[in-house]
Image (cartoon, rainbow, N blue to C red; front, side, top):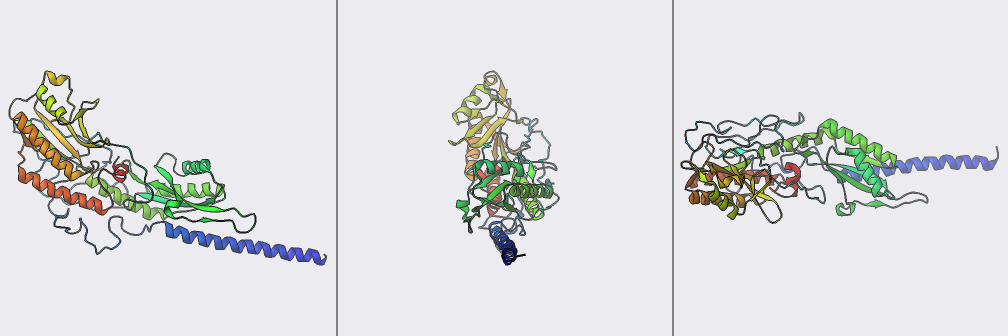
Length: 421
């Protein structure tokens, strides 16, 4: 062996060692950046970072009773319920005022769905105050989830996976990775790294490729339920395989902790996925169909193909729905020759923007219908609702909305539409 060959062998060994050391350093840098970008999944999904802060569920805020105080608004969620299931009420023989039915769940706690074994938060307490039935959300809502720009929203809604990919990865490659990771099982999209301040890494030595950090955001709470630990583990495994196939890397939060957050968020959302109903019933006989139709259309309601009437804002968001007293449709043509014993106005709490204002509008509209038709505003048991009863509902509605907003959910906005449909 010549001196030249020996020198080349030594240089080769040194070069391999240098590359290995550089790769280890680069991986540590990537993990540090990933830890900084990913949210901490260890905190309670339903509590602020500072647990000493006053919350709506655990105490009193701004003079409004918390949900643990006797509420008049209660979820009709039953075991196995999902956010996209809508059950309409039945008034029965409402015109006779002889109905002895008991309203669902106003004297005991609600058995809320437990869709995930990873989390078992308790449901809000209930009390024995008679109010209009609170029903599962109405059927006709805006289901157009708007795109968001980051990871805003309540804890547990998103599962972010950070990818370090070659900068040459194009849109087609990103689309293929997204499909490989979550497919159509969950909504997912790539976040703009510029909006999140995710840095790119320029190539250093000659021949090295520049790389960039990208975040794939997967929505893990929706009307179908929360993602499970095994589902998230599958996403992570898919992500790592997809990243390696293009010469990249992928990291993600702990699947078990994230699934627990998702389950807790879904449990809470199930407890507030309710609709408030106000009924207008005829004192005797029924309302003349032609007069009723004229009043409904004059109030701005429009009929849908199933003959349910909806009141919508300029953006197409459903503010209130109107049905007959049994939750069925009112055929505009049939109203010309038939009488109607009762009508129901429904406000879908988590899906209606400006919920408090819409409740006031619905209550006013119910009174106007009752006055014009010589009827009464009643609950589902036939009891007349006076101003004091409406006021108590108003206070408890405000308490429910505070609990939602404490978790980053504003009724009727893009985040709420993503969660509730």
